[in-house]
Image (cartoon, rainbow, N blue to C red; front, side, top):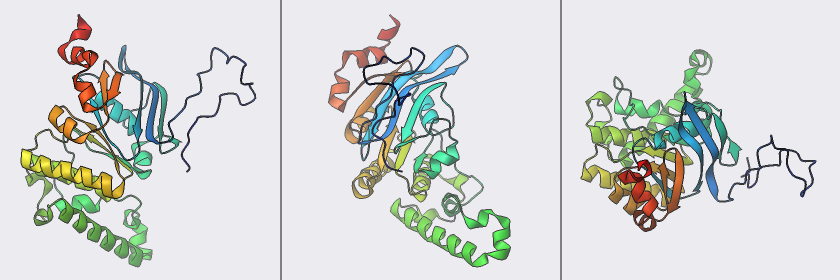
Length: 287
């Protein structure tokens, strides 16, 4: 589907200078270079707005950081964008298509994948099996194909194994291919989860605190992979991270959230020197 640059008016028959009815939302516009656009998105939990009329854009081919104090709504926003939660209000557009209200599986199939703060590996499966399981639409998922289309099933399985071995080689986990995922270290589990995103052939990867619990050696490897994949394959990254040194080294631009809303966007240098950002982190918004 071609990239949408501007949403159609709510009433196509309305003249350009006629005021819109009060009950209709104003038409939303989306930058041409944005792979992800969030417009006036709200998510309520009871009487609390965890995300409150949040709007932002992630430009295609960037490594965009998302920072903010604890409770700012960052992970909730990721859950909304990836379909694990549905917005109370607002629009989410990915690659020119509205995705708010769609299931995680539908969004995944469109090329958006994510990791979590705590890795969600299949502990009782090997490292290789964790990767082979990822690709969607495998013929072997339908049991009758094993009976009536065994050649197709076998070919897909071999293709997925070959790709999984390539990915494991890339992230330097080949030596653990037959190890159960439960036995990996915390840093190795982070790399495994990252490797699983690559099995999906993504357009965009959302990383939720990739640096948490990872030693500096593994973290350098992970950041190197992110930079290479953006440069060589054009994959867009959207990253929640609390390590400001990592954000400054890896991300540009950086988006800052506080109390469910975006309060600024800029370069790492601009963010670090912004008084509103300093107040948000130091509790100034509660004075």
